[in-house]
Amino acid sequence: MHEFWLHENGIEGAYVPLPARPHELSFALRGLAAAGFVGVNITVPHKESAFALADDHDAASLAVGAANILVFDGGRMRARNSDAGGLKDNLESELGPDAIRGETVVILGAGGAARAAILACDGLGAREVYLLNRTPAHSAEAIRFLAGRASAKLGVLAPDAWASAAPSTRLLVNATSLGMNGTISPALSLQLLPHGGAVCDLVYNPLKTPLLLRATELGLRTVDGLGMLVHQGAAAFEQFFGVKPRVSPALRTRLEELLCGGT
Ligand code: NAP
Image (cartoon, rainbow, N blue to C red):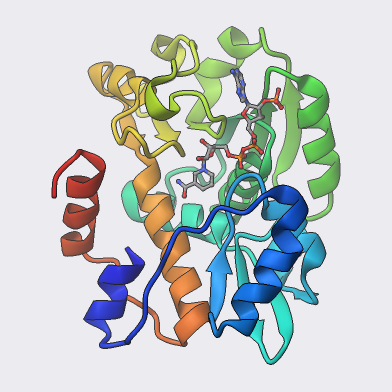
């Protein structure tokens, strides 16, 4: 994605995946800054640590307590978070700007992605947002953290509450890691969702997760995780290079080829 945009914008550079051990993250980041990198994207499990190591924070990273971007700027590390904005942009583009306005959303999970999803749905005008997670205490902790930062009513659903919640749920978001790399998707009965309901999966590998395949079979609207990945990446690229890259069909096609095993 970033290589595509570097090429499209005539910027000389490279985007490389670099693993880091948790206890060496600080050294790794300082080394990258010293080596002339403009910044890094941060992924699981380093987002909270990167946030803690940063010298300053934007409102989005403060809202979720995690950074998916660090910009290296004259010896300072600036924490940014584009996960919530990326999901909001993608839901808006895939479902329309008013699809969940005044509606109820249920989010599976309670980690950083679930927190970002709460903010994204709140930003799109959802009336109520509930977290349903295998560990309800983690849901309660996430809701406590976000209290006062969202206009929507936020709440926790018990793991067995899906049957009663589903009929009034306009959008179901999978923000757990279930369904990733061949693991099973959450085993919820999607038949209970109302006509016109939608299912969004933040997992993007595989692109068509078992959850989304089941939703498609039932005639529900679906949103895959690649769109969020691309939109959060576009915001990161703009932070690194000061250029807003295009989220184009050509880019999506290229990424689908790569994810589906093309060349
Ligand atoms: P995280 O902080 O590790 O949270 C993972 C969540 O999944 C937790 O709520 C955990 O439940 C739940 N979970 C894990 N294994 C489970 C299982 N076997 N059964 C039921 N629940 C399980 O991870 P995260 O950063 O929030 O990321 C979550 C997912 O979102 C990942 O798949 C990640 O790739 C995806 N993501 C996608 C994008 C994108 O751009 N598309 C961006 C960010 C994240 P407990 O609380 O009980 O442990």
